[in-house]
Image 1 (cartoon, rainbow, N blue to C red):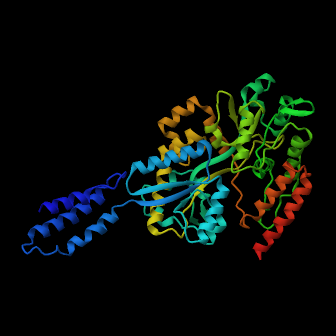
Image 2 (image 1 turned 120 degrees about the vertical axis):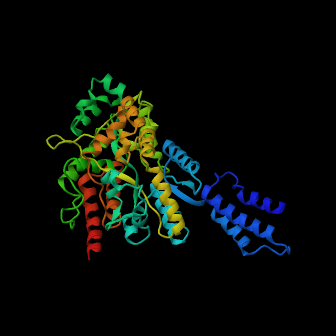
Image 3 (image 1 turned 90 degrees about the horizontal axis):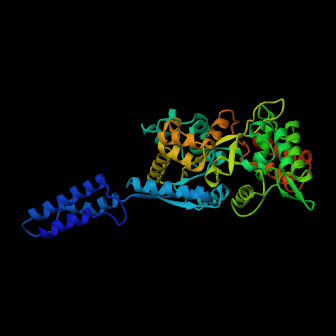
Length: 461
């Protein structure tokens, strides 16, 4: 009988470092209790009946499901993600998330591609690829959502939720929203008598950048503005001018239109001829991004165009935020507002998929998405997050948090590349030609259009 009691105590002992599961503990207790009764009731000293043989399996089922979550975030964003993972793991005992950080979003996708090929995938990734979703590399989340009455799809920012749909199925979920906004040194504008409220057009920003830039020995020692490396910033300016990537019928690539050429040529002149703007390029992961931020924070540039998610890395005693400008005679800016989405690889087991969904749902709870927004500057994905008391109080003291939200209200939707990334690849090459190699925008964009159109025609066949 004493041995039977010891068996019960052993079965109920929680795994080291894990919270005990009430449900799992009860199932183990019942199984162990039946074993104890069988042992005590036996007068012959025979081996306990088959009821006891279920104890190891029950103990095994009480273990939490361990999954990997891959994400390409660095700096304070990576630190905040780790905190969220730790908080989730401490909040329950059914799932343990192991965060695996990569240098950036691109590296996450590259490693995921290799993982899919080797049939060794993580259960959750901060990454989305429409083309891969169509090929079945990602699991549909519709059944998991339908089975969860607490999900409340109607509470999500619908444009963000819709961006995760592929061919009518919800394949990705928005972890947070982002848009590119403007950050400027308050002292630089004040010293030059520039009212930030007057910078509502790119023309006005260009004039202000020229006024603030400083030259020493024929070289620029202080830049009036720094766009971020890549095609995205310049594409935002194109959308604000009325340009588009494809024609309305989706059959023609329009990146060599006047809206594109005139906009990109203006940036080329600001960077290479006027030398009032600068681009940091290359490096490992987000290195170029943080170099750009450092220029502004260390007093080497008046401002830069960057992510709403940069707010966690900035000192708002030095800088302030404003929306992206539009163009004279056209209207307000219309930069892209997009959701940073997460997905579940289709090759993950059903148990892992359920565990990944549980983690995603936790991250997107109103209070958690509001907390993420306050700590990072990214846009909360739940409408009810705006009613969170902590978020309301934070907004009153930190008005910069509202800039991305305001801009998102009149933003453009992100371009969905029907070629699986070939058109955006052509834009990346063209942007490097303009920003780094000083190639005239017309030449760079016409070459890009020819390549992109060829890829689009191939897909259309």
